[in-house]
Amino acid sequence: MAASLALAACGDKDKDETAKDKNEGTDANTTTEESKDINLAYVEWDTEIASTNVVGAVLEDLGYNVTLTPLDNAIMWEAVSNGEADAMVAAWLPHTHAAQYDKYKDDLLELGPNLEGAKIGFVVPEYMKVDSIEDLKDEADKTITGIEPGAGVVAASEKALEEYDNLNDWSVQTSSSGAMTVALEQAIEGKNDIIVTGWSPHWKFSKYDLKYLEDPKEVFGGEETINTFTRKDLDKDMPNAYSVLDAFEWTSDDVETVMLEVTDGKDPKEAARDWIEANKDKVDAWTKDVK
Image (tube, rainbow, N blue to C red):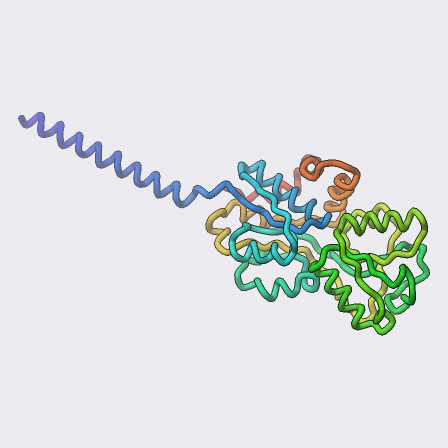
């Protein structure tokens, strides 16, 4: 009987130890395991197609199920702020997305610039005999060829028409980023006048001889940065993904390399993979804090 009781006691003790181990394992998993589903929002500008595909590919290599969601810029900010999307690497500041930043910044985590030296403004072919917005008279049928309605550069362009007296009877013709570049290419082939809403970095500056028109009234502001934002609590829910997004930064030459490949017909995901393969040192720097 004594032996039976001793064995029973040992059995109960073993069960307690096993239960304790299981509970401790659950606690450990709860603190270290993170979701592997991540949604990156972006604007369908060439720069953002390039950057978002590169970041997405890096996260995929770390085991994440990555969704890339193209949105209008205003909806992109809203989606990240309300948690419908997890992050974006496509925020132009301090001018282009100033209105969206002011509206949504309190509901976001701001990770800072991922690219320095960006710029927006009116862009023309080098052969046009104008150097400043104030030089414009009746070129290009008094029309600015724009991109998507609601884009920051379009809003700044419409403001320029109000600020510059020589543009009071001009108009901004909105379309899409792709349609703008097609119109630019066609105008250059015929050596015709065209003024487009431009931004850099962009592959068009590598492919064509272009120039920004001087902006003495500084309607378009000075240099910009492209910035990374995430939804609140991403740093807690997905600390490794957050670490990569926080470390992500590259140069105009980097992004233009990807953009040119895409422009020449390569799939954005494939172009992103090409860049990653050729820049392992930079990718290693982005992922060095991943646990």
